[in-house]
Length: 217
Image 1: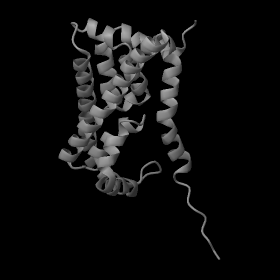
Image 2 (image 1 turned 90 degrees about the vertical axis):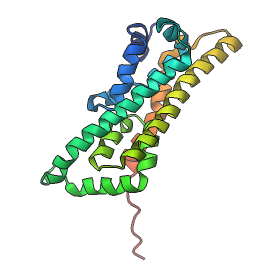
Image 3 (image 1 turned 180 degrees about the vertical axis):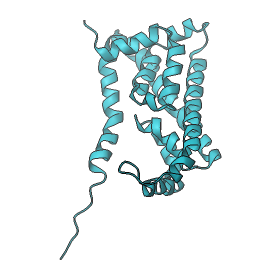
Image 4 (image 1 turned 180 degrees about the horizontal axis):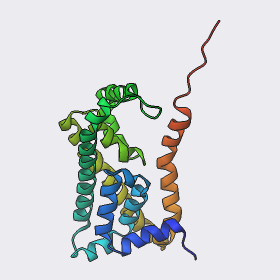
């Protein structure tokens, strides 16, 4: 059976550098502008399916240690994003309005993070694109650092653990129950995860800002 592009890409990461490449990918996706296109959710789930191989390659360490390293990569990625935003923030606040930039939007973002920052940093971990830019914006609007770090750590723990353990235990269950491996279906699994995680973002972008019609009666 021919493998799709997504499956080939994820398997290439798993088998060429394994854990080390995965740590770089998760770090980049959660902290660098250019990391927004990387398949974080799918990669974590696939890594859970291949967790035994990753553990063997990494000195035979227990898979819980592998998960801990990925959590640390996610936390550090967010901290880098916050730092970058914090450094760029003063320049943006002093910047004059242009066609592409309006200071009022920056002030609105500040007010939003003051009110919903905790939930945003936590939930952003589960949303592609948003998890890349949320920590950067948090730094720009100078969200409280202690609050940011707490929800960054909490979100990273739950995001990474749920994805990797989900892949690991589902693989074990399907293999023992039905006798076949999910490794042959990474492509389909990746596409389903991408659709589930990106759908809320797409709906919000295209339909979230529509205003209710004004009743003139």
